[in-house]
Amino acid sequence: MTERILLIEDDPRLAEMVKNYLGEAGFAVTVSSHGLDGVALEAKEPFDALVLDLMLPDIDGLEVCRRIRARSQTPILMLTARGDAMDRVVGLEIGADDYLPKPFEPREMLARLRAILRRRGREQKSEVLRFGRLEIDLGARNARLDGAECALTPYQFSLLLVLAEHAGRVMSRDAIMDGLKNAKLESFDRSIDVHISRIRSAIEDDAKKPRRIITVRGSGYVFAKVQD
View 1 (tube, rainbow, N blue to C red):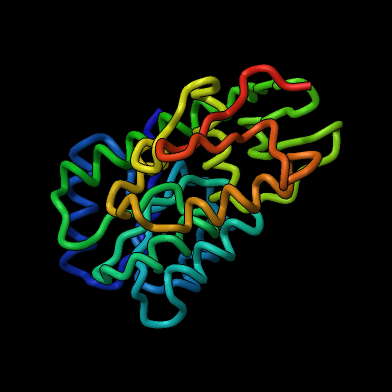
View 2 (cartoon, helix red, strand yellow):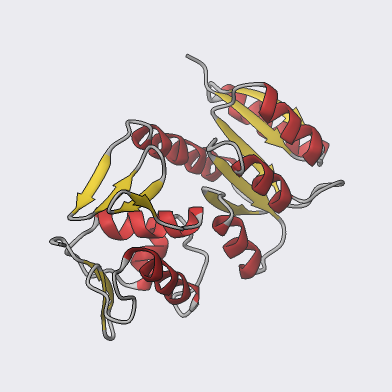
């Protein structure tokens, strides 16, 4: 079955280039030049993924992402000409699956798009990772402690999943960011530490004495394999 892509991009030349390139790769591409129109299209028609520009003439890509994520888990690849790392962090926090700065090579865009489609396909198998009283549901994209859903943002869930999939292995910040497909952020960015602190507040019995996500001084973090 041909996978359908919604491209929300207001630059007509770039939109035409992306549409043609993805079309040659076997995708069916629908183009919208405005954020509000894109949100409405996504609500009416089934798409396998979105390619979303950050800078749009009406509402920006972050707001588009926020509105779509309120009702849908359709994979989102965000494009932007802005290099601000905070935009990248915010985009991932509110639910973008990956981030590609302009200018970009079409082959890289295609590779990233295929990667998020594969990743979402695996998650839709509704696999559940169990660590004692903690369950991580890949299909529902949530974590539950003693059956109660933990309060995590989409970005924090993705971060938790990266750690859990490497349970028992010490992961540096670089390795975590690579797992999040966010290699453009530098390893000294402290947002990883802030988000892990918030994840601990959601999944630990005592966030000040964590037993699930453990800090390894000078190395990074390790997710405990065996938990009560």
